[in-house]
Structures are given as structure tokens and as C-alpha cells.
Image 1 (cartoon, rainbow over the protein chains, first blue to last red):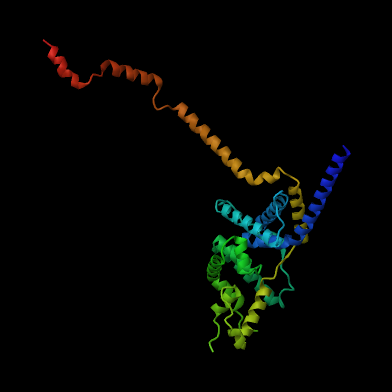
Image 2: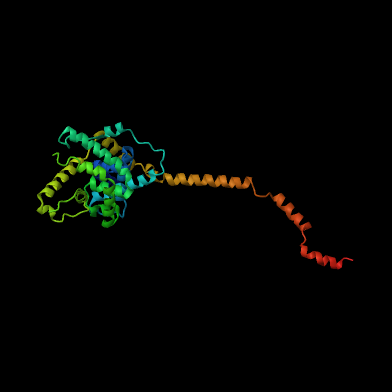
Length: 198
Length: 132
């Protein structure tokens, strides 16, 4: 009787400890995952939902009896997030009634960092060009969008992107090449518009 | 010496072109690479996310971790699809029963008529043999 109670207590303490550990890992990764989802989905509400789903899936996978020790939990989590976003993007094709959220809501959640740019003009320009790139991402196929987002915003190597998307490096190169081609104008303005000015 | 083009730099930035050693020899292109690397870092700097929003999101995740019913939500599409199929099947069966192609009474009556009247035409000459 006492033994069973002790086992239950021990199990509950283990659960509490693992929940706390998961909670602190989540707090460390949350912002990165949310921004990755937002960049992939271009919608703060959907990114919120995708972020929640990502951590829920991660928790469920970690608590399976057959779960293994992870070499790189961050990369593993990124893979879950990207797949969750791809699923949402695929199901979005059927949601013709969807409305884009208002820009004001998004701005209250995302506060652009002023320190990132050395002066006000650059700051405004950075905001404009990043909005242009965001809307241009809609022209890309799902795989191109995922590959470009992981390279451009997360600075992942091609090998890492290949692992995350479960593709070979050659295919990732093709997707990235096409993405860069489709975003030619935006990337020109991003990198070369002020060439010679500074 | 031939300098790298805008396309070369763009492809290099996205990992599609290797540095072929040109940068080591060409100060201009090396400078451009440094400028582009800095520009990229500056432009793609992560925006701040409201801490209230992140805290609320964490609370929702924790709620969902302890709420097994909500965790079945991804299956809602399967449940909806099954419900739609059941309704469609019901409607189809209802229509089949309400509007039969031919009623039983009509069928039996047609069969009886055929039995009484139908005689193959080939039998007619045999009948004539026995007519006087």
C-alpha cells in the first residue's frame, strides 16, 4: 500500500520535473519558433496556433516510451514547426473565406527593433523591404518558401535545411535557386539599392 | 580581373555559389561580401515580440498539455468528414426508397401480361400446320 503510494508520488514528481524542464526549454525556443511560423504563414493568429501545435507535438513525442535522446533538439523542433506550417499552408488552399488579420494587431505583437538599424531612414526602409519580402513569399511554392525562410531568416546551412525538410541537398539548392529568382527584385532592393551610397 | 556580378553575390549569400578564391585576390569583391553580410544581418534582425503575448501563448500551451480532449482537435476534420458521409448516405438511401425505378405492383402486372400474351413469332407457322 505504502509502496504503491510512494511510486505514484515519485511518478508525479517526475512528471512535474519534466514539465518544468519542458517549460523552460519552451520559453527559450518560443520566440524563434513563433517568428519562424509567422514568416512561413504570414499570419499572426495562424502562427500562434502553429507554435502551440509545435510544442504540443514535441511534448507528445518526448513522452512516448520509444522516444530517443535528441542530438539537436532545436533542429528537431524546427522540423516539427516547418511541417506544421506546411500542413497549415496546404489546408489554407481550401479556406477561400479566410481574411487577413489587421496590420494593427500584428504590430502590437511584433515590435520592430529600433536598435537593429543605425538611423531612422534605414529603419523605415528595413520595415518596407521586409514587408515586401513577406508578401513576395506568397509567390513561392511551399517547399521554396520553407527553404528560403530557413536560409534567409534562420541562416541555416543547405545541409541543415535538407535535414529539416527531409530532402537531399541538391533538391534544396534547386528550391532556393528558384526562390531567389522569384524574389529577384526584392533582393536587389534589399542588398543593392544603396550600393555606392555608403 | 573580372569582378563578381550582382547575381554571383546573391547566389553566394544564399549558399548557391562557393567562394572560388576570387575574394582573396580582389579587395573590392571582398569588401562587397562584407557589406552584404552586414546588410543581411541588419535587415533580417528579429523583431521583438510582445512579452505579454508570449506569456499568454505559454499559458495556452500549458493548458493544452494537460487537456487530452483538446489534443484530439486535429482529428476534427476526420470526424466532420465522417459525419458528412453518414448524412449523404442517409439522403441517398432515403431517395432510393422513396422513388423506386418501378413499383412492385407494376412489375408483377407487367410480368403477368407478358406471360399471358407474349408468344414468340416463330411459333406462328407451327400453329398454321394444325389449322384446318
